[in-house]
Image (cartoon, one colour):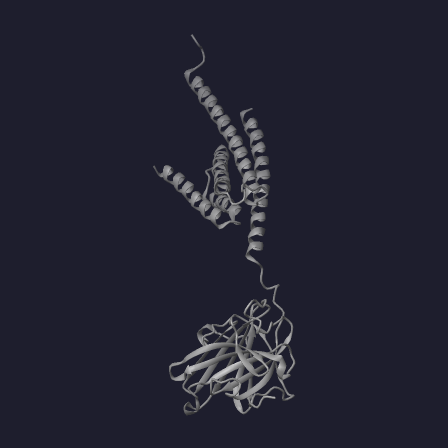
Length: 247
Length: 138
């Protein structure tokens, strides 16, 4: 058994359903001018005793998670990090959480961070050979903003075997962890588990461009065909009119 | 010496000439509309890709395919414009901009499936329109 403070099961998991919306830019900034994250599911919750805002949304390709919280300036660790440890399904058993993604600050005063992707094997965090998804963070004054994007329904390729394959229409347990030292899992100070539901893709809303163009082309050719028949009829009518006038 | 008055002879000549001109114009309407319809059919076959002049990525065949796809709607536009112009002239009316714009849209609309064909056709149609506009001004 591991001896760190990460929570793996507390029996009262908060459920959150990912809403569809326009993909936000993963840069650690919530840009109000472009109404980023406006369609996200938003809840106010706690990581242990740390109050956080948790926002979740998705597109047909990606799941987006943002975690925001306030800490008094002196309380921000220079090596602050936030991570998502993802279970293979909705199970909250420790061994099922095998994919971990972190935004790790290297120098918080200059907002220098790195995005890390790990495979978790028996509480040992092993760096993935190929990173999937993206992550970014920004600390401004008292506020920390973290943003993640994780691919949905994308095949696991070589090097990505340590990533959880997120499927449409299924629920996944996410352990959201906050910590102060870049040592995993020992550096984790606060964490909690959330159940995120991923919706099936909205196929009906997207009409492919080639279908529209094909339909328009067929319509144009049909109109020309009808026009030609009508025009030939008019030509013959004109002929009889001319003959009548000559007579 | 002829007893037919000179004015009457002139009238008959003018009438004969007008009938001859009308015949010519009418024949032009028919011939150009036939050509227009032929190029419409060619455009239909190639631009909807019922027929394809394309063999295993061969560049020459690709160019020929592109040329046919561009030329067919351009020639359709040209012949139909002449045909409708003459048709309207026989009825004593001029070809107006509304008909030209409709013909332009119907010609360029045939090439929506390929951006390259669409671009070349669009430029070609602009050149044809500019040419006819300029020779009218001169």
